[in-house]
Length: 149
Image (cartoon, rainbow, N blue to C red; front, side, top):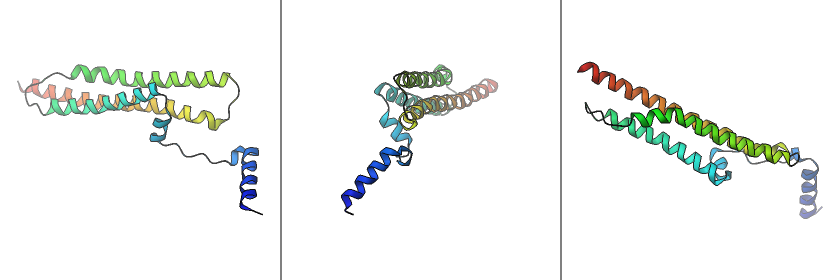
């Protein structure tokens, strides 16, 4: 048997039994690379917002007795981050359902879209949790400054 006939028979076997085919495992980087540009933008904005929340908190905590702005940003982010992530995940789920309405699809075709939707929801929750923790730290700093006055 030649190498060509072995690879051809393996290819036909995988076509006949798609469950035998191994897909590459999904990673967060792969999910991001495979996402639509609008979803990539939401993912980037959520990550940047989480980093900005930490930066705002660090600036406020290091400002000494002078309490500058930033609390409104943290308050908005702790509520808005999860909602934005959920909106992106819901939109992605809607697109998956529209695709499924065109005809049945195997699960390995639908799975990357589901992973993308779950990743968007995760990023929104992550952003919200970071903002809540940062907001607690800032509020504790404000309480200490007010009580010392």
